[in-house]
Image 1 (cartoon, one colour):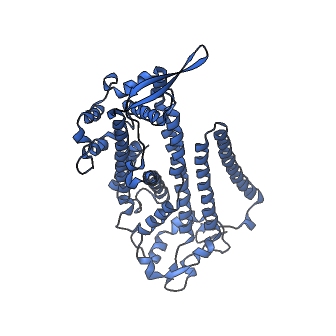
Image 2 (cartoon, rainbow, N blue to C red):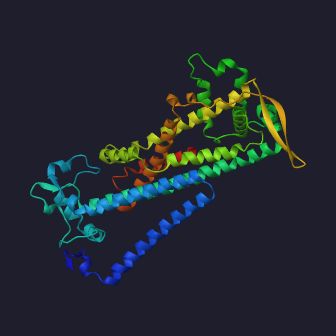
Length: 437
């Protein structure tokens, strides 16, 4: 069936049964493999008693289910939406690219329309719906091809966000695992490591740590009259470009945690940190309602000449610097509380002698750590978690939009902006990934 110099779509009535069965089988098998793979991964998390990671996987599965509903609605209601019309004058404003008259666009895109036709799903007309189905002076609100491209964009965004979330979880667990050697060293050395954590001369400190140690000797630097501790914030800002946490701070936080909860000196603090991070993962993966609202707002404001896609790249960049500074400030405050205190706390150290357990009390001089909501903005730790969630989503969203626009329209598309803008966005995205892996 040909017409207009190109091949038009054909219905299932004119499609060989083997072709229909083959395509259906491929998609069913692929879907079952993904579903069974996720199910097996969830069972592994259950057997390994990784409840937090299991809940994180459930969030990802819910996101995939939501994607399925969106795809279903777009497919079922595609003919109805494509039949909606509007006055042509409304089609000349708020465009993502320069306006091209409909007749000129049709004449210049005849060759491009033919290969695009094979991507459309179902049609019962001799020709796909076009602006000719509308009355004079009216055009379609969105064409079938536009709906298909929107469908692809949502799919690409969801898939890349899921992959990005999984990568974030793996990198986070890898970083936490790198701290395990400090925990093993602390447990093997027993209470002496607690003393060393409080005695700077027993630990090789980097220059930044020496700065923090010096603050203990100068009380007027610890609390300014304004209560802002500007020196600490400046130091924390530059400290985020290094390691997430240093050994001296880790040992201090461990000692303070043990003192606060009156635990044994051989308590596995690293295991607690890992469980806590796994618990936070389920809050920073997935696409919540306000993130979908952000996507819709971006699609509304992506107007030609505004370069919205370029300017929104600065939002997560600024946020990751602010969040990184705040996290480093919290670590420093808690570490300084432990190092600068003079309160005596009893710690129980359990030693196995002739298969008998005996308790030995050690007197250690340090201040117990006081984790509290006052350390966070507005005394609400969840604000920080939501910001991290938004940063991760924004990174995945920019990456998805870039790949979608590049493969759908080409690298020179007006949707991506100018070449130097693309380079700047890619560099900022790479920098954000390093600062907030």
